[in-house]
Every structure is written in C-alpha cells, then in structure tokens.
Amino acid sequence: MPLRLKPTYIVNRVTDINLEELIDENIKGLIFDLDNTLMPPKTCVLPEDIAEWIIKAKKDFQIAILSNNPDKSYVKQAGEQIGCIAFEKAGKPRRKAAIQALRDLDLIPSQVVMVGDRPLTDIWVGHRLGIITILVDPIMKHKEARIIKFLRKMERLFVSSAKKSFTDKK
Ligand SMILES: [Mg+2]
Image (cartoon, rainbow, N blue to C red; front, side, top):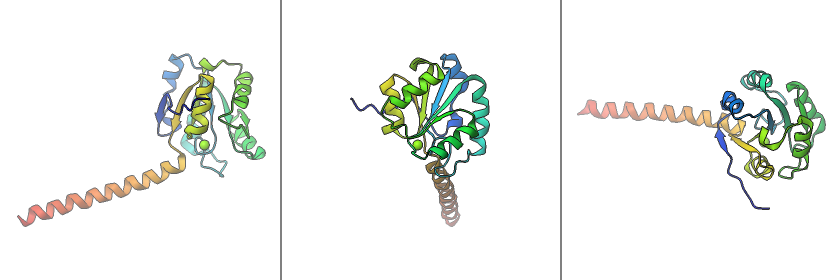
C-alpha cells in the first residue's frame, strides 16, 4: 500500500476547523482521533474550548471517535463525554475499524472528514478510504508552542530594548 501522508488540510487545533465550509462541501460526519487531537493524552477530559466546539459541531455533523488507544474503558468514557460512538484499538492505518465507523454513521467516505494529529495513522487511514483529512497540531505540542511563542515575544522585547539603548548611545 502506498504511503500517503499529506493531509487535505492542516489546522492548529480542531476548533480552527471551519464547520460552515464543511457543510458547503456536503460533509455529514467527522471522525476524530482521540489522544492529542480532542484531548491531552491520559486525561480523558476535553479542554473547554474543544468541548464547546464539539457541541456546535454536533448540531450539523455525526461524530465518531476512532482511537488506537487499547484502553476500552478510557475510550468509552471519552465517547460518553462527547455523546458519540467510540472505537478503541482501531489499528489505524488499517481500515477495518474505520469502515465499521462509516457503517455505524451510515455514511460513505465522500461524506466524512478524518481529523487527527498523526500522519502515519490518522491521515493514512483517511487516504486509504478516500476520505478528506485534516491534520491538527498535537494538543500537548500546542501547549509547548505557546510557551515558545511567549519566550520569542520576550526575546523580541529584549532585542527592541537593546536596539533602543544602542540608538540612545548614538
Ligand atoms: Mg493522536
């Protein structure tokens, strides 16, 4: 099977996904990876902004979780929190569980988007089924990136003040 890892779209966080655009493209269902896509790993708690976004998304889309996490009770709990079907031990990029998710949602590949943080599992399985894919930044990395952003900002402040003092000396 050819390795195809380039997603259709890339966003920072699931909340950046434009739901209106997906409605216009006749998308009816969203299949999500769980860990680092919807919630930080091992927490089983949706971040507040993502929880609010999911409530909005559920008005127009059917939702499923497709997780490679083997912990059945963990994935089930996440599914209950969101109010959607949830598959643990999905074996992505294998297609079997994804095909089952499509069946359960009663949708065909062209009506669905696959959202995940890992090209080798989430994006690849989407490609293999001809599903539009959206790659998100891992949630934990996103947090790190915010710290880095902050540090860069501090760095720039330092640079600008240094310039100023250099000018002052002139
Ligand atoms: Mg993940």
